Length: 203
Image (cartoon, rainbow, N blue to C red; front, side):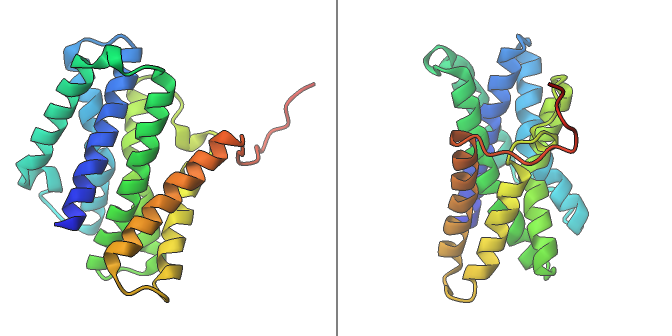
């Protein structure tokens, strides 16, 4: 029940981030729904396909379809109240990657995978919905820029397995690891920390 709650919260966060991007691109209602939908389920779908958990999660549990639809409706209806569009998008996207990272790790552990593979699975779960969203919206995906994004998920995943040596309650581990992802991403943006570029800028 705890893991499903985190999964639903992550779905809501990613759905709203998808709605914000689609509205910023001035898409019609159908476009907004499609972008929100692929943002919410893209990473989780890839995760389930990779571990052979088919049909994938949203096909066997209609709760996710309902949650996505309700979240789209909510975000569209109250779009005028979601001020500072860029800040809202950043916030919901950051919450989403934090929650989906721990969900991916949990799925990897349940499949009895190596810890490094679990971290990779969590990172893919968190990032690839946003990758699909950005590609469909003709944007360079955040994961391919200098921003601390996928690396925040990796740090959160590493923190999970490091804390596993000291904490036995799995729920606490998931909460802390998810919080680490969110905090790392927030700190990186606030203090303008970015990954080094392979190319030198011309002066």
